[in-house]
Amino acid sequence: MNRKLGAAVFMMVACAFGPMTAVAQDDAEGSGNIDITGSGETATHECTPESTVEITGASNTVTLTGECKSVTVNGTDNKVKVEATRAITVTGSSNSVTYKRGHGKSKPKISRTGTDNKITQEK
Image (cartoon, rainbow, N blue to C red; front, side):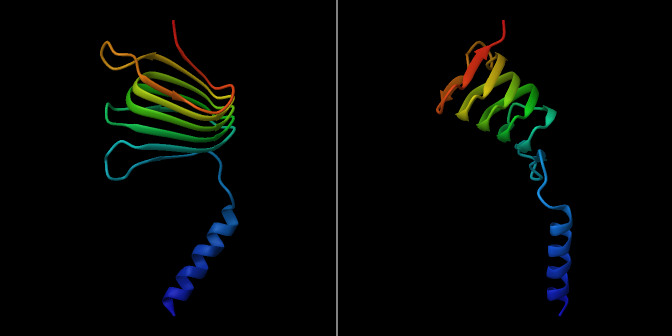
């Protein structure tokens, strides 16, 4: 009986809050994963050299400080500024990623699929 009550309470809370926008979630296991999902939000996150960042959604503006292991952007019209990363992957359309530098003297590995996605180095 308690299981049914718990499930009912969970469903009521989920229905009350409905869909959420731009949720950033740091991995609880300490691996440094940062997952950002949503629409129309602005956020700043600090990376560590082991941070993997995944941004999914539309029309988000995200600033990543520090050094990120990798940055993945999925969706439409996202604008991302990255201080430093080893790899950038962009899928979707009309996304824009600007990075300052790679790790060390290397430029980041870049993968871009979709339409009108731009990845540029800040000058």
